[in-house]
Length: 422
Image 1 (cartoon, rainbow, N blue to C red):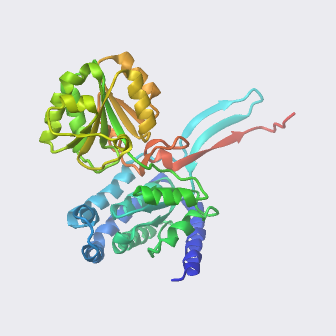
Image 2 (tube, rainbow, N blue to C red):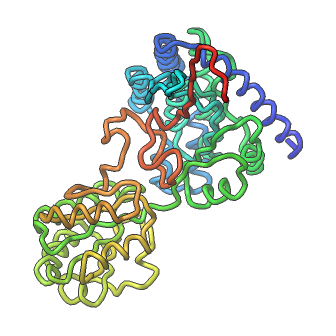
């Protein structure tokens, strides 16, 4: 397709999505839940077709030399497909935030004002690699009565097409308005730019992927974007920390799943704890095969092989079994380091000192700030949201794990009995 044809096709999808969003607002919670179950049923009914499509993607992935980790993310099998369908059904069990009364009051002139949650309208989701994002994003947006335009990566295009077709076909039989869930069917890079400029139809874009993709969307988008660039997450071991607890939390934060945005990248250790704590954590991390990079104090006490950290290390998201270690002389220095080098994502303090913990949580400028807990808890499921559309490090509208409530806006409903302004 020519660039002009791609632009025309995406504009047409936008027009149809806007029309669908007008119809979605009239669905009740029960109707939406029935549609979600129908979508899940259709995914299972089309298992053979979806897995065949996934085989095409896997064949291209092998030819293109994708890494084992990327191929694993891309792979679907009957067990994973059932998990995808079950996740759609789980969204049906979540409370519907649309129409929720946030607050209300009556003015002295008798006007009664209510603030209620409403859908955003049309949400664009741009993502890479994982086919399950197609169903996760579409089902969460639908539950909040938003129309969705999805643009997946070329690696999973056949899988994404098959899954999106199942969602729309199964949903339409149960009453889903046409064009509520649309997938851009081609992978030309210009489609991202055209989508990002379509502010007359798309109200919000959420990019999920690498830093390059997110920077491209942010630099081009004419509508609001919710995103996070990096996950440079810290654990600060305070002078009054329980060392066993600190070691367990650090190992979990770094090693439980090192390739995700809420994994630990830097530990800060108070100088008063350095001589005693560094050998403990050095041994634990060496056993977990973590490569260590430290400042002079850390190198002197870790007791295991490590290399000198550079200035670049303090702001690097490794997404691997690599960890940097820095010694600080005060709580103030720890807070200043995190606010300067961190990515405002997830940071934790380990201490028995409640006053120090309160200061840390108050002054560290991150979406999620923990006390005596692993950074891996920055997750919608772990927060009890049931599911998440992603994690935001923005400060407006949504911050931290984004559940259903963050896929809504609000409006004011005002009732009077003839008042006029004097």
